[in-house]
Every structure is written in C-alpha cells, then in structure tokens.
Image (cartoon, rainbow, N blue to C red; front, side, top):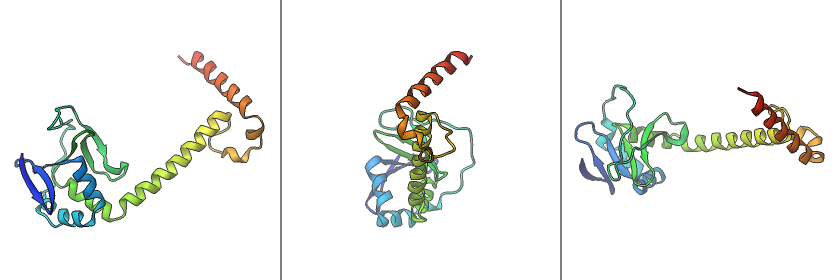
Length: 168
C-alpha cells in the first residue's frame, strides 16, 4: 500500500487496483467538509477506470485482519464499501469519488428523509401489532386503542403464542 496525502487527507492506496483505505475519522471529515470533498473530486482518484464486477469478496481489515462488512453507503447510494467499524473503510477504485458526488448532490439529505419515513412506518407497524390492529391502517383512526390498550396487548401476545405453536 502506498501512503499519501491529498489536501490534508491521509490515505493509503493500492498500486495494483487503485483502491483506497481511509481511517474512520478521515472519512467522516470528508463527508462533512466541502473543502475535503473538493480535494477528492479534483484529484486523480476521480479518474479511476470502471472496474468490471466480479464475484463478491469479503476483504480483511488491513489493521486487525478481521473480515469487514459490506455496506451500501447511506443505505441508498448504490456504492458498496467495505467497513471495519474499529479502523476504517476500503474503497474500490472510484468509489470514494462516487460517494462525494452522492453527498454533493443532496444524497445524505434524501437518505435522512427516507430513514425518517421508514421510522414513522415502523412505529405504526409496531403500534398496530401491539394493539392487534391491521398494520395498513393507522392506530390513531381506531378509538379502542386508548380504551383497551392492555387488553389488546394480552390478546396480541396470546395470538402470537398460539400461532407459534401452530406453525410448522
């Protein structure tokens, strides 16, 4: 691995595949800082040739040698990176560049809005399951929720227990 500095960003680059290793703090700084993003976009990192998709391989962290997790950055960017939570992130050729473009195009804001909407939907499903109501409908539309909440919890738990015995 070749070590380098790009606009104050410490990085390590593979001379064979042009992949990059960034420690966690450095990657977080790039995600937050427009100047750091500009340095990435203006570098030769952005010139990486597209890499043909091959079989999925799980990589080992260069520091602790544990297998890293493959993660879709921001859960919706379409850029799959390899992450060691303790040490950093591996970017195949051009992935860091694609992530910076995603951030600059408002991708993080879209990801946050999607996550908020998903949390609201999940909260509705949990409340519906807790009260035994149809999860498609909002529990707020039923007046029995407040009056029979405990009874609904007991009925729901009983139904779940019964179905667990009946399912093969």
